[in-house]
Amino acid sequence: MSPPASVGRIPIVSNSDRIPVEPTAIEAQATVQPSSSDTAVDDIDRSFHAALARLTGGVSPAALALAFADWQLHLLASPGKQASLAGQAIQNAFDLVDAMLPRHAVFQPWSVIRPLENDRRFTGSDWELPSFNLLAQAFLLNQQWWHSTTTGIHGLAHSNAAIADFALRQGLDTVAPTNFAVSNPEVLRKIMETGGGNFVYGLHNFVEDWQALLAGGRLRSDQTYVVGKDVAITPGKVVYRNELIELIQYSPTTSTVRAEPVLIASAWIMKYYILDLTPRNSLVRYLVESGFTVFMISWKNPTPEYRNFSLEDYRELGVDAAITTINSLRPGQAIHAAGYCLGGTLLSIAAARLARERPDCLRTVTLLAAQTDFTEAGELTLFINESQVAFLEDMMWRQGLLATAQMAGAFQMLRTNDLLWSRVVRDYLIGERAAPSELMSWNADATRMPYQMHSDYLRRLFLNNDLAEGRYQVYQVRTKKAHDPYIGPDEWIRRAPSHEGSWWTEWTRFLAAHSGQPVPTCLAADSGQKSAPSYEAPGSYVLEQ
Image (cartoon, rainbow, N blue to C red; front, top):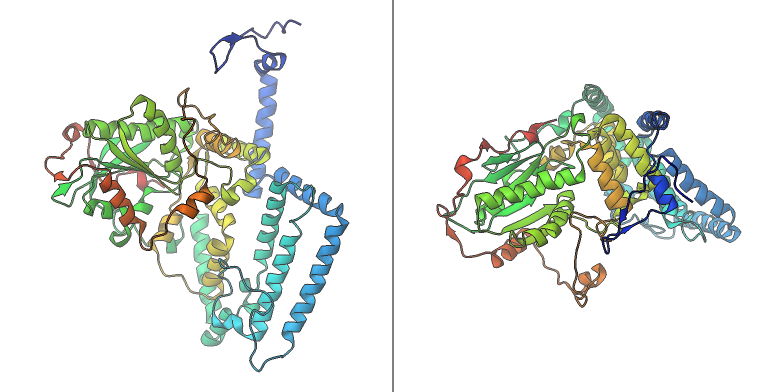
């Protein structure tokens, strides 16, 4: 059968042998250009999804409904599992009643169930008093039971079980006894100490926060540390700038430096100065004082005009541009490149390409909390399926970017106890502000992400895992020696020895071992720096809100 007249017979090039082949019927249909009516329909659907996303916080109702439907249908069709859950509920009730009976002269807390190691809600001696401890144990038993309802169900998709479990846990966390004045011993103690004045202070904090949020600003408690004054104060200059990055070079403080410079590719999901906080906890300052010349990528906080910047643009204008600039400033010197979080993922992509095109430009590559294989990417993967990604794409398509509030909301949803409920209890029920922290100030200094780049990241890396599976192309051929041994992560952890202390010292030893001998600082001066535009660190991009 010949293709429709509107479809051209475009040869499709095979990646394996580059021989043109004829398109199949399905491939031919895929080349049909959408009509104006199709585009209008798509725009209507996207606009509706974007409006719906404002009500759901960016969570796809369809993805959530499908997960719950899968869980409920399989649970209803599992009478054995239902009987097991009923027996577990009865046993929990008997265990709790048994714990209430006085068997010892002194009450034994946590006799039935203990909080998980990372659950800090019930720490403190007041939670070991009988009434509050039994209340906490009842809550933990209930939480454990609901978790059991989503596990061990034959036929239930693992991803849907994880989504249902996560959503149920979020709901239970809202009714935890720590979140209410009458059931939180710390709040009750504060009421007795202040005569109820804690609620007055809490109301003041609540009104103050809402005024700040409605004005579109940051909370006052998150504005204590000022960029360039209190944090990000290591001296340096911006030696390169394009529409996406500023490249900061930090001033040397030692008489000799290593000839090989260090480049840190920070994550654009947050501001770079997590690695240059106050002088006492600045990795940048530590490296400079250890005799290294340090460069840092500071990303621009994008506006809607950046909507079409892709992940490839971030590679070309970000990591690639920084490496090219440093090579021109330090000709003949290979770079120690380090990537943090998303910056590490991007660095790994750039390094794979540079290994073929410019194999001598990098001396070492260090990845810090960075992923290249997204098979097991933690709880973020719970909401990375086709329905959720398409929903997020429609929301970003409308705005042109992912807003800071939506980004912060995603992290809060993953850690509600630490980032949301603990703050609500402290600020509004106890009526006290947490001590100012440079880390929390940095955490509140959120950034935006362009529509196209974030879509590429979610779809190509998270959803399809193209990078780990060899389908992400910034070059056409990637080779691996057939007999190179592979060590999986579990085996690596088993073999690798553990060392106490800071990883900073271990990393500087690694860098020094792969660097040449120190040379006088004056001899290591950048040959091209005099002609480069120069601005004082921390630059201007990091200050953009």
